[in-house]
Image 1 (tube, rainbow, N blue to C red):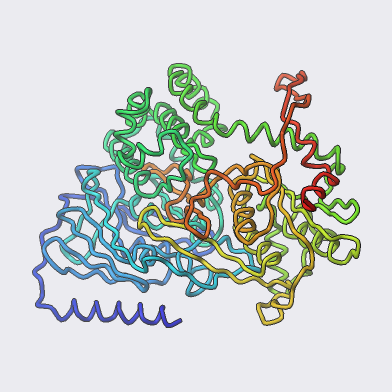
Image 2 (cartoon, rainbow, N blue to C red; image 1 turned 45 degrees about the vertical axis):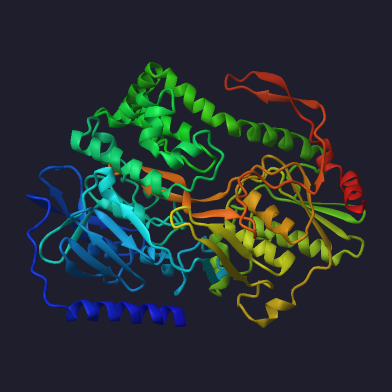
Length: 611
């Protein structure tokens, strides 16, 4: 609480100091002639409203919005104070932080960038701009960053992106630029589709279609893109990817993208890069879609997906036109398939595990016991009955259990803990996440708290360079309140975690935290996946997602975990087994796959723990 109060005091002092200066003469309006349009604003929970957008004569199809108006959309009820503090210079102060913008040089500077763009307080008052998915049995506790403050400079001018002022104390950014800056790890993001602004200000949704089912219609109706919007869209996309992509490390062009940026990487280091750039700049919608597909191949890391063709699947005419473009650009298709290739081994592992494990434990079994060793199986950190959990914590329903909810990973885990701890024969509990592709970090925090009595995320920010430690607290007895009784929860079992190359994202974070705490990791090196996901929109309104700069996950000593977690107790994957797959045409084919049989041999797993 002291930290929040001090920020408010600082903001007040800055505003007072600015007001006390000799009055700076108003400058002439920057940016030339313009028109204004009042457009609808749609969010999922707030009443629909309206906002004024500007369209300047030199870029008549690029939407601009005042910084204060944008903040009022994404942080309802908040106020941004804009003060003219020098030639071309404006100081922007909101409730959490301060920034300085120069409309002559098109530079933005703040030593509190994360605080300035923080929307996470919408979920929990006082929460920092951190990784949190909103499950009610986990809540934010605290943040320590090193260094505590870093000056962040965003040089929009270097990308040909103009920041403008109206001569009356308002600063105007391209709508997409502010949307990029404010997007966060809860998928708070906003887009303008040419007709309306749609913003996620409250719910954990990646696609704005979840907010407004008609959002994509204007995007698909404009099959010819205005030249000024196509040009700006490319500049904006390059800026966003160069600054807000988290560079987890696994993609082929990671080094070049980090040092040269997207534009030069396309021009110099990707064989079909100039073709992709040409497609991205094309005024033809289907060409542009093909260019975004090409970028997906370049950036594909398991989290980043710039392909926006899902928007056209229900439009037969547009889909057919897009497929014709695909046939014309096989060089781009080859690059995309190469980018996907790094993840294909994970899919093969998943198929092999899904075939072999039921033979050992039974179909759909989540708890299996043999002798003194039990196994808990769940294949994601994403399946939660959010409605049931929220009702329970609101006192409006029973606690979710296997008896009243289906496929809830937290329920599966709690059920296994209860069964194992109440069975006097069971000494060991192995948590099988060998086919776990990830999901919610909140579940990781809850589960590690139950096993270790600690829940944290160690991460770095690739934009600011800060390393952070974020602590969470968990309602460990799930009685609906956070209190001292949570400390009494303890399970007297020997734990281990079973991983494979399919254990990705949160399926990689979970064993990393356990291994650091001394819990043995069994199996094969996990699949990596170091960054949290951030939802974004292009300047022309299409939604996509990236590995976020805000949270590249690390071990406690700061090591990036994208390479995966090496097991303490490796299990050999010798030989292959025959696996029958059904092809799209209905025929079956037998293919060899890795032999994961030992992963599900409880006697063998017990022997590893005993040695």
